[in-house]
Image (cartoon, rainbow, N blue to C red; front, top):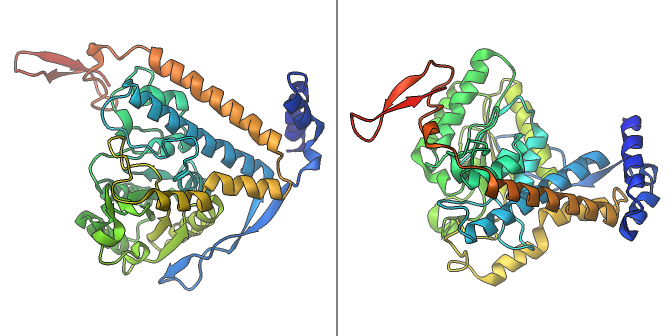
Amino acid sequence: MQKMLTIISNVLRGSASRNGTRVVVSARTYADFTPQATFDIKKCDLHRLEEGPPQQAVLTREEGLQYYRTMQTMRRMELKADQLYKQKIIRGFCHLYDGQSLTDSSQEACAVGIEAGINLTDHLITAYRAHGYTLTRGGTVREILAELTGRRGGIAKGKGGSMHMYTKNFYGGNGIVGAQVPLGAGVALACKYQEKNELCVCLYGDGAANQGQIFETYNMASLWKLPCIFICENNKYGMGTSVERAAASTDYYKRGDFIPGLRVDGMDVLCVREATKFAAEHCRSGKGPILMELQTYRYHGHSMSDPGISYRTREEIQEVRSKSDPISMLKDRMLNNNMASVEELKEIDVEVRKEIEDAAQFATTDPEPPLDDLCNHLFYNDPPIEVRGTNPWTKLKSVS
């Protein structure tokens, strides 16, 4: 580790001659920074649990910088998607995981915190607001933006769009409200059957939480003690309806009844991380499923066609934004505890912006998939088959 930090430090020193800001960065070595710090985090509300996650979290400098970079990348990527949509380069549905202006923040702490609490060999499935999870599960900004513009280099080869993105151990991106929950339980059943000590994180929103199929899934998962973490991202509004108007009980973490539950501060990446670690250990120990409610907020509308202010006031949005920005919270923690410098974080911001611009350039110039690819990839590892076209006389070919 020390050797790696020395190499990184030397790289930063080599960039010092380019401008005054970077001279300041290179003037401080990594030995000047606090390598790790312990932070108090909000206590989780518990259901059918005697003990919950710890109320303190240890953050290393390397972890903090990585979380900061990932959340900034997520936010800037969604901002670029917003711009491309308004330019009519992205068409169709587009559900952003982040806000629609430079000052907006939203649900980045959920995705980054969850990923920090599980392993890449674990599995994850979510609803149609999937861009952020595609990134944390291993997708690249280039692949995600190219998918949004329907290009050949997209993560689903330009065929999936905003709601249907996939990577290894990530099953989308699902367009039908709540339908991913029973699918996630099926993945968890496979984890148990194959005895790999893996689990499935199954995400849904407060709007989907009222779906009957979710309660059916709770029952089966509990009966079979499936290693499944059910996570409700409660961002206060299902489309244009507040949770108070849609649900007789808004204690979503208690909805499993016989399944233990946690209510977590979803705007704090460390709180989400520690709760996810706790939940993962619960599942891996053979205790069955657990339910988490992440209290978060979306500052933008439900989708690009929703301005987001017809059912709530601008003052409400501004109040939450000013007090609960997850990136600002992490940034303040690191700066106040000498774990990073302002200049260093600005440097990350510059690198992220460049990555986003390069990806956008690719997403607008990469060719669209040819018509011959229309029916490909229907099945995995099968010989080529014929597929009926729009009439019985039109035959198309499908290649795995």
